[in-house]
Image 1 (cartoon, rainbow, N blue to C red):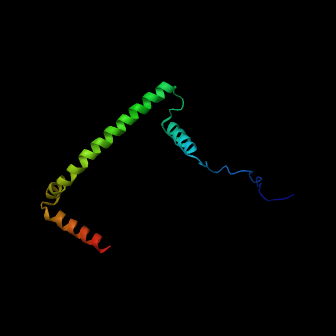
Image 2 (spheres, rainbow, N blue to C red):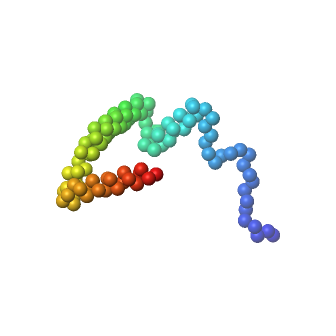
Length: 105
């Protein structure tokens, strides 16, 4: 009697991953992953459409707000440095040091 553990036979084809040989196969995989992630695979088609429209609208609003806030943050850095350290020169020194280290690269 052999004491070796059971070893399954080799598979006839590769089942470890999903091979995307075409754009449509890649799009199908991404859509399936989207449905599984948000658990919308059990919804009816019109409910999926409403969900995708709402998610698209929320994503658009998020990135629109982000694009409008980021430029304002650069003007808030000196004020934040003043409130945190009592002096804006600390931020200026840090920024000069960071710029010098980037120039060295």
